[in-house]
Image (tube, rainbow, N blue to C red):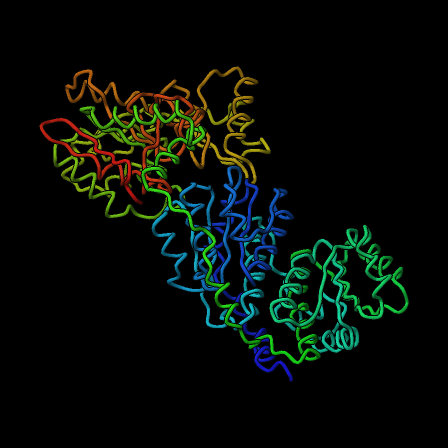
Length: 635
């Protein structure tokens, strides 16, 4: 029986490839940019595991960071504490991957992302629930799959290749403009039909297929194994070119006549691959497919070639991989739940709060400190509220986007109730412009803003840009900052603050240490703090905490507690002094102090979503603020 449905899916691959080349890659690139400094666990299930493997290999070759592919069960059963997680799913409906994503979100794995080739998926709904995560739907009609992942594997591979290239400034010029060109330019064959014909000569009459592969073609080998097993096309085992030489070759000594070898050999490992194949017994039938070009392009071509190897095996097995039939017990297996445990929301929230502190969730001493912190903020009567700006009131991932209506609405409500409000930012004029646009005009006279990390403090009504005198643009300090290879070559300076950023692939904390070194070399003694995007040198010795003293004198406050909310509560974060207080609450990073700087939001709630949660729990009556945080709130 000819594999008719599967062949029909293969015939549409040219359209899949062209669609993936034409799509706007910007949203996916922005997500991948957030993975750049992290080891990554790429999660996939079934056919999407091949995409996860391709993504892991691309991440390692592009960033130098460790990455590996895993299944949803691996993520469910092990908590990832260092590094990020990205889930890949064609439909976003698979219950295993949905469960894995939800658990990773409640554990606050960061970064946490999902890439789905569909709209309105269950994963997308989870992304709306856990807003610190990034869930992107890359939708095109040609990406739809049949029983086996065909279109989605090629679609994922092309999209991932283009997105990583966009992040690292690599051209797309060497990515072939069509699928037929890809085969001619990146493989040792002239067409896909030629690859299938050659495969027929190796697979025909043989019970087993042994796939040997170069490192660059690992995802292709994994995908071939998946197709052979899922559609019962024959026995298959895979090994890289060197692992095959460590005992795997013994199979050939016993079953040479029953086994065909498919060797996927990259340009980089051609000599090793050719020598390996030449040492096999003469009776072993071998199909050698060579690949050339950029590593990511070779990887895409390998996945496409593997689809046609499966077509060859399907023809001899008399199976249509696009419609193999699913037995009753198989449906039952598919619908088993990978995670049967239920944990109360209160326990999840407490565990999240302790994990943020770096404590074990079962540690009794830390549990007591958590309960004390919750009791303290819930029983205090606050004189004022001070909030950080970037990362707290506006999402650091979307600095150019307007505020959400819920954030502005809660702030308006609190000021209308009589709250004394202060806003602290590391920025200068741009923050004031955005704040005046987001908040109703009648509130501006009741809001104090601390610009440049507290160096300039003004009412929001003062529309004149809070500029300070320009710094010495010709100084050796600024020259050193501009030339430093770890920094991004953009320096903004004035009399009170110098701000710079870090280059792609450099952690902002490492950039801050580099700036400190430059300051010492230039004889400058100043505080260095970081935000999500910048390194700031506070030349005037200022701190966001300075805003509190001005608020007390301006509004005639007593020495009562002031509620402080920010996102960078761990030194050298630019909120660490502001939040280093029993009434300091974070929406992201916390310090290790058992009394100061807790994050007491529901598990999986960070950033602006956490800030809105705090604001909704805060009410102002009789000239004082009261916070009511529940132990069992849900995001």
